[in-house]
Image 1 (cartoon, one colour):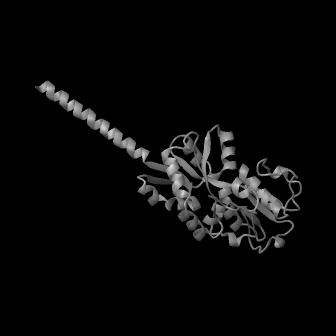
Image 2 (cartoon, rainbow, N blue to C red):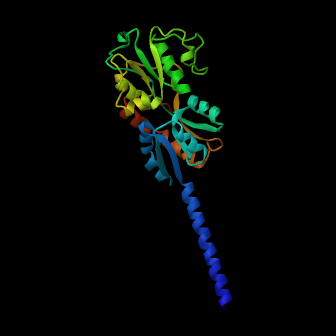
Image 3 (cartoon, rainbow, N blue to C red):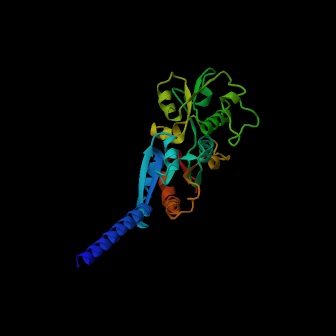
Amino acid sequence: MKKTLLIALSVLLVLALLAGCAKKQDTQSKTITVGASSTPHAEILEQVKQALADEGYTLNIIIYDDYILPNQALADGSLDANYFQHTPYLNSYNASNGTDIVSAAKIHYEPFGLYGNGVDSVSDIAADATILIPADDSNETRALLLLQQEGLIELPADASAEKGVTTLDIVDTKGHTVKELQADTVPVQLANSDAGTVAVINGNYALQAGLHASDALAIEDASGDAAQTYANIIAVRKGEESSEKIQALVRALQTAAVKTYIENTYNGAVVAIF
């Protein structure tokens, strides 16, 4: 009798453990953990929490303030996806780190802007002005192309976003001093710079610094291929683009409601691209 009771209790314990494991796995499968920059990415993600909840998913947003950790966390499995970067930056990161992260969807575009300290227009920029730009590969290219667009520097005739350029490729600085800085420090460096200094600033860092597209001396020409090339993406580990949770996340983001939120909130500093 005791033996039978022990067997029965053991079976019940095993069943309880299995049920607990199944419940834990189900909870994990219904949680979508996404790493994001605080502005605008995390703010946009906040808008889809309820839509995902209606489908049975819990959206967990982890905020990062740099461009390295969110890809490391995605590669090591700590995140299901991240939302902070464009494809050229991702390609550069993969090449440098041996990772295999891919785009699952394009969500928005953040026009780069040229901002000035005590400068009201491009024509007012002094011939010997210091120009601050972000230093990482793809964003450096983007900044230099904007400076060429505005006639502040000259690049080789074949310069392009796809090919990439650095300050070493500048054919003519036209008297300006082009200084490379870590992207997230550019707004602070501009604010603390001498009057007459100008800077090319990433859209999300400009927003965090309280700058708006209307404050910019110049903005990237959106009629070119910049919008598609530099669209901010939902990035995932290769092979997980079509998983149920990632597709649910993409569906929730690519809606008219999210597009309206972006238009009403960011006034041209962020543009939906779906």
